[in-house]
Image (cartoon, rainbow, N blue to C red):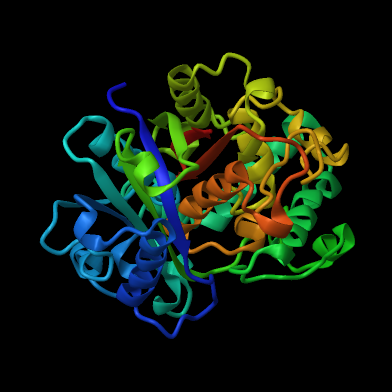
Length: 386
């Protein structure tokens, strides 16, 4: 595995519907906050990893180069990575292997997204991601495919819409205590069921919002970690996996790509029984059913069992397995690449006991963050511990 790698500093901007700042400025604010958190200066950073989703969102081509000065990447080894919604966790993995390899000692990881620049709606950016010969003639869009997947999941296991809606209720309530949250509101299951149908069974309140925002973390090797903090949070395991790009060929009721990524990360972390070895989880939740889907892919419960965990309150902040105590994408917001890194930051704060009103009730020493995206077939997983 190479050198141990720790996270010693974190920062994030507020997630908002339409940021007044440019993408560069959002990246700068998050990066500066992360450096200030641990008392480091940019001159003490050896390399920078930038994560950002399609160029079209910020309205510029070669977005890695565009963001590099705001993210602190000028005159340094700088890498941009991009696997759609999986970027926020995959960027951490990229930062990890730079430091773990011994090539560098410190790395600043910055993820930014400004979706509001794309008009009239960011969904339009995804219309050309499908195969031009076999898929585009069917005129698919992401919402249409998510509706198929959600319906398949519900039908396979006999899951009620009310059970899935509990995820949206939980996460939006958790976001009430997050200072960077875009959607601070308390809703009920009935609110979700009464919200407009977008593509059955997906309704408006099943979906995370369009957001602008940025997040950053500072990663250093084991020899520097305690120089910058007395409470380093260690990257214990990383994993990633890609399923087929053809959504028509995938099992829509189970995210095997998440399981493969999780198995890789768990093996590295020495996790043999995820349900008991993992104390807190931040799975990717752009839709409420995806939190359940991903909990099963992370092997934190059996297939089709995640809805019952939610009904029983196990996934609440005071439950036995707190899930998305941050408020998740459904509550905090979904600036795509930054959203996954927000989840890593939440684990960092929870493991250090610094999450304030969001601090979970049980004692936590190890957590898992996961993100999903690209052509909806990417699994990226990081296990953190103290």
